[in-house]
Image 1 (spheres, chains in turn brown, purple):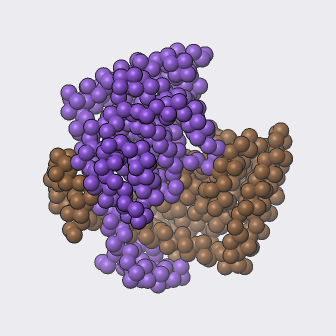
Image 2 (image 1 turned 120 degrees about the vertical axis):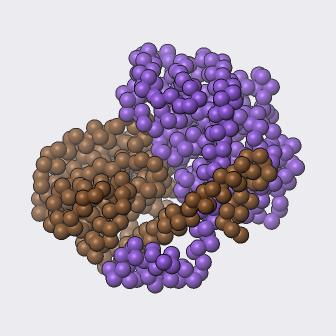
Image 3 (image 1 turned 180 degrees about the horizontal axis):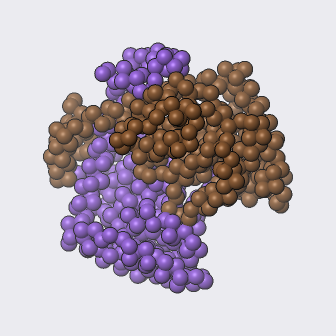
Length: 312
Length: 312
């Protein structure tokens, strides 16, 4: 990419330039790091909301309606929809996205889809970086929406300040099983499509599990909100709970602690990526290919090969 | 773990010791690396079959019936069922596993479930290592069964010698969308539950996409096999196609190329893991925490912090 991306235009909120900057992150081209460095001191204003849940739970609808709710309060909104590109998901997320055009046409909302290519770990990093671009561009709210199908997708949602897990009455059977991963990241649950049979039982099941949750130092007790997002029901309640959670985090010091922890992990990741690139110079690649021959002949174990390469 | 695991017992195929060794891998305790090193020269005999597909496609049933088919030919079989522990999957895989007890009781079949805890990347490595244990224990066939919900799960299936993607007629809508990831790893497709409506159209849709596939150097052309696994229909055909693909890979040199490439990636991973552990010594952790303060005050960017830590 030879044409440079204007930092000033991003700070002014120019949509085209923001889109270009996020593309630079997605494509991992050299300019992304420079842009992010220059923008870094302009980040930290936006509040980041993670929204995750199983396919078909209505995450896109909730994101859509919440964006409108924030717009009514004159807040600027950025949405990053992370599509884990499950080869079997059949592009349902993309389909949902088409519904959002009325929000997207509103100039106060910026929507961007990011798809996985290669490692999901990388996606989590790229999502945070894209959120930084939106943050620097002056949005007040960033929503990170992702289908929760694996640990890495949970990581993405969990890199938010407030994380919402959206379930539906049909999720009921699975609620016991989902205890582990979700309880750690959910600041509260939304039971969407709550006009369907089984809604009350699902709420009870979630509350029972919440009872087992060990309360963290900040003594926030996660709750369950019911919604019928397609009709706009429950959206103000979700918005109010986000505001309440934000206030709680700010007062308790939890917000700063979360953001510091996230930054720590991010720096560690940058360091490791850097070391990896520097380590695998042409000489070491050459040594690897020679040693690989010996490993394939079973004259070395993979561990011995690694020891030799790492020079110990 | 103070009690050491007997290498001899693993080589003799002692089920209890094999289970202990795989647990050592899962728990990442120190003895795992030593066991794997000692066993390494006894690996390479087993043929590894990856089976992936969307939830509910019947992967477990196909794995079950294929295992029986191999048993009829007096081959010993190891099965590793990788459960990506989707917090939303509700343990369906575990449910399926209960059906397999009649195979499991057979002493010629070893079944092990491995669940994700932490990073999926790690799971892919652990799955390969568990397969090495089974390989050294003398099984002839190893089946790696995983729900394909994300890139990392595809990696697991793709670490096999032959990879089968199982679809059902209902997958039809998604087949176009799944082009990218699946075409790269599928050596052939099974259309299971082929007695349901839409089976023919699904086969046509898959074949159309296969037409777009760029043939690799080994000129293997992937095909589609129909099955009704619950009734045993199509199982001998699947088995025969695996045998044909294996013969093709052996003759073309593709088997050795695949295994070499996998080993290359594995050594790279061991090296990087090692470097990471060595890098983050107490001094560097201390430096990180000091620099992190500056980053949070926006007096450094995360990239500058990483540069300082990496000592450049």
